[in-house]
Length: 481
Image 1 (tube, helix red, strand yellow):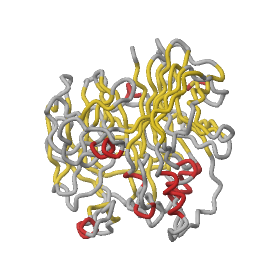
Image 2: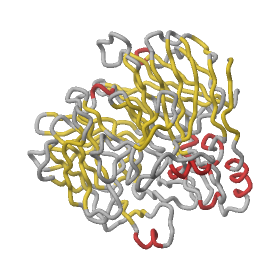
Image 3: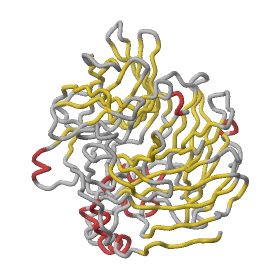
Image 4: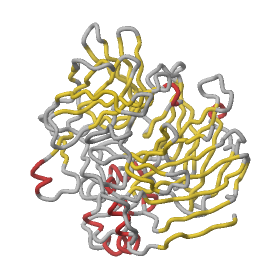
């Protein structure tokens, strides 16, 4: 590896976390181990590769997550509110040209770094930490419930807040759905002072073309939603805004609300009345995909058992009462009922499909399982669950009702997999899976590239990064062609 540079060596985050943890009433798993924030922005060129990077991978693999820039009091920290940092690898011509990690320069982050923020900060300004997507030649870092997206350049520098050509008013989401055939970007946004949520459709011109307001009570979190060719599927989870907690200064003023019914809402994509179906409560985490099937809608998703505590229970991050599983709802519009089924009870999260099939029927799905994440989520009073966990990536075949598992060693935490189609691919799974995986022997992270059609075989390539990529959230492949 050559050309390794450090743009900035920041003190404060890791030392503060280590110093404060001893005084905390219980462990801080979201500041330790695979979650520990990194304190530097790195640039490295000509990365070492084991195996061979496929030559048709021409673009950038990007993933973001919370990486707090300085922590004065670890006891007041919540993982989901850490400043966003994007990690990226540039692949071209069979080479791994560079790795970069950069904080998203919100006004607060710019101030912490001693930099001047250009212009006036937007309302609810935040260093978006949840997703990073390509959209019409731009790279957008996303957050839910208030902040505008931030546009990044090809080297992960922050350009500006982005409002879809001055057409986005109010909140946005971290989990957009892009319908490639229609060239439409869809979002469902919420905000704590609204008496509704908003379905936002951005058309092929890159402007907000339609906003539908859907009345809901109690200002619930709507972290994700689903999209079919005909419908928008809204999931009303009983995690609702707590005004008293907000007034008292809670970082995450949302509670599990037993009095708020769990519902699925089905609204035509073109707007109109929403039809509601009440169901048993779960925490709806992430959508794999959804599609129309005659008079039915099929939604495949990851969920965790009720109750789910978004604000956590003293461990510095969310708290769950069980590990996430892959599940399916079938909404029978003619009969007016919802059926549920378990697809796979292996603990797994961050489900993804071939992005060209979003809102259309798919055969294959992919997910990640990271032992350290489940331990952190289920830690209550400092006692992790008595279970056997693993680190792996998972491939599901919905036609054969089967799965394949690509396993990694202990402490090799695996992050969300992203599918990239092979050049000229004709089959849905003809392509590659890319994921950041911790290498405990190096104390750093590798970009692992698998063949999706030889999922359990040896990786095609492992790109050695110069540092760690902490366990975080979501990412995308940004193709150059």
